[in-house]
Length: 367
Image 1 (tube, rainbow, N blue to C red):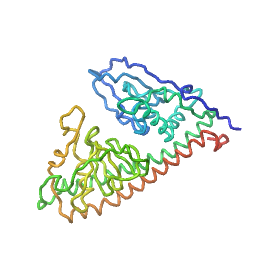
Image 2 (cartoon, rainbow, N blue to C red):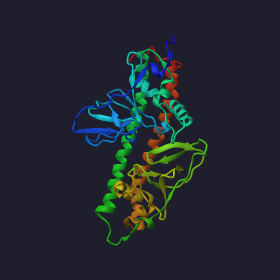
Image 3 (tube, one colour):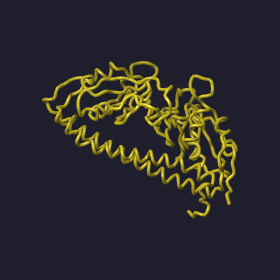
Image 4 (tube, one colour):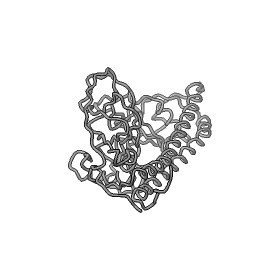
């Protein structure tokens, strides 16, 4: 028997706006940029003085942090730790499940599902304002299937298995990145050939930036912004190996791309001038603290002049070829892991509604 009922989200959770009132010397500030795809990215302690006005909200374990701005950017997180002296921005909703009705993790999986995010993004775009934005009212009006708590727990564990594999892939890729960076450092930083020439980054790349993508239809090609993939479009802007460098925002979020893509106008992309140089350029730029080179505006920004003027020792063609041969298999493995993780994400998004609605019955499964 299907015991699933359908309820407004506002009946299974609350929006919490408790103000942080402690007088601790050091705190951790969580902005919208500090949460992504389920995780809190920042745990750095800073002095509790002269804080910007938006840092007010407290939150606790099992809460969900969900950005009011551009839901499609997937700036949300499930709090799986005790956030002592953490303060969230007022631009983050603090959503707290009513645990006698719904499991916090079950609610989180519902809110992160692509169909839910797409619905919230559509609602955000219908509101007037300088950028797409939602409030808890839009979230509260969504309808969520609510099976018995025991069934919810089975669904949560099923989703967690898929998510754990994705996290494992990310950890493997991080390790491979570190290995490639170590090879780069060994070959080009610790043991450079004195015969190599000295030049500037402009000798290796041409720096360009993307165009407005808003009028392009949905498709399969990723659109990159400073925070990562923003959405997908019908046709690519560029289809060769490239290094992406933010023009504004999170300047150190340098990315290597080897697939057709589009980039927004706040993200530089680069064309290579030499063979086998893209991965070298990526590791060279990745090793720099671009944030410390901020061009001086109130919003962290990078310019073509700063990038082009970077001094670089230009390896020989044979050294670049050797580096390529050593790290290319690592990049192929990382790409394969990314493809698998994308497939797992699609499986999760397809499976979750069927489990929640009871179309796939898990009530007899014993954990």
